[in-house]
Image 1 (cartoon, one colour):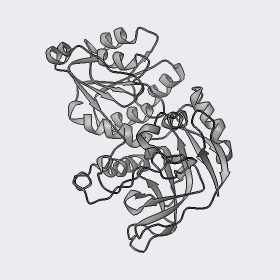
Image 2: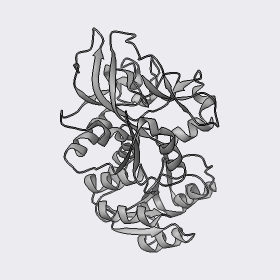
Image 3: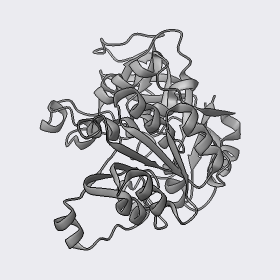
Image 4: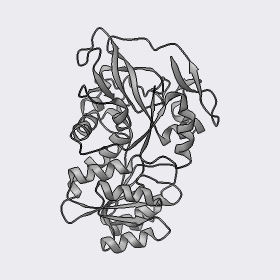
Length: 342
């Protein structure tokens, strides 16, 4: 099969011919990929930023936002059958540890793996090995390429919004900083789940125009005066700020946009957060980290997606054009999410 593999960090991946994955256990599932999202994390992986954390053997296949059709199942799989349309939770988990039993898939301490990040081949290929626990069954008429990026970008944004719902009652304000592949999903999730006033912040006018179309009531250009603009719009700061940038100073802006007793949800990474401890004490402000989401988050998000309440804005590329997609993403040319289609 064709697959996009990293051979050396800080160099472009290559498109190789490799063997198809095989079942390794009774709960394994082989999925024929119908769409694989291209994520900014993939750029970080290619750059070597995740090497110390995941340390995969090179070369390996990247791609952690995947949807497609069940191609083969292990002997113990009973929740899906061959031919089913599925989207995949990015981290197959053990189901037996305390974190899994509490529904915290990303904190699994058992036999979890992360195709495309850990030492396991990902989905920028024609086929992928995952497990039954990762499969969320979709309507048969769902096009996997239309929803694939919801497996990571979508679930990450939805997970943060879901956690913030108790704070976003009528009369509150929420800022989405960075209305890209994740941020535009957060805007829609906020509109679907809350009655808060949504404010979008981005340096790209096209991204802000999209934000208006999908639920943002106010938009702010990140031109250096965004903190002051948000402070004025919110009367002193937002109840919740979702920071999908979190680098280049944006992480400090997000904190400054957060109202006293408010919540700053950090989803982007690459920067360094610093704040005087007095800000925490006197302002009673909260900083909350986020990593992907739970299986239930993905299942709930797919209900919204299949009802048309959350729409993933995508640009599709054939698998053979993976390098073009990665370069376009790096250059800021992709509005919404790039999707590879084998």
